[in-house]
Length: 266
Image (tube, rainbow, N blue to C red):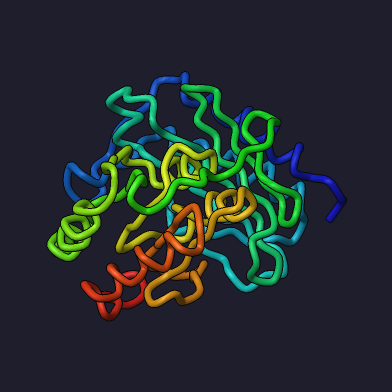
């Protein structure tokens, strides 16, 4: 792999976003809450073609069309459109997400919202950026935090657990928000627009790129009970602007959800 490819990744992701301006079809994957568009598939195919040439022999873990080829030294983790419903409904809160992992560790991440021209990027050990300018998490304390969350849209049987966490967190923090693109929400933590985030079930392509951006911006994230995030299976995701806030949120989540209520991709 050649050195300094982050700018190449950024250029490829930006070019792929032009597909969003084309006409598209919508298909229901598992009810009206879970949809896919032809734009999702086209962007993923475009990224697959371009990125496989950028790093020959690399594997791919992608959301659409069962593109799942782990076990390579270098692996791309891709969500062609995070926030597809937002995209279809023209809510301008959608993103294209690309992460590059080396031996299981994410080393580069790009999250792009083309509707607001927000290009988030990070490389391991080199900081996080928005449109080329450095970003950093806020220094707000827990009581002055904005909490991002969701109610597990595709597995609504877990919504009561999420509501229990929300009810307890909400008593002590400033307020909560839901943007329906978890990758962007994690990036909003990275740029200081929020301080806390919890989702009970995220897939690797939902958070891989954004988690690196958050960490490189001075934030932190983990799974249940402070465990390491997994990049090949679904996982609970807890994020914060500081270690202290992460510990407080993690304690509430772990009390209400003592164990992961699902296995693998079920």
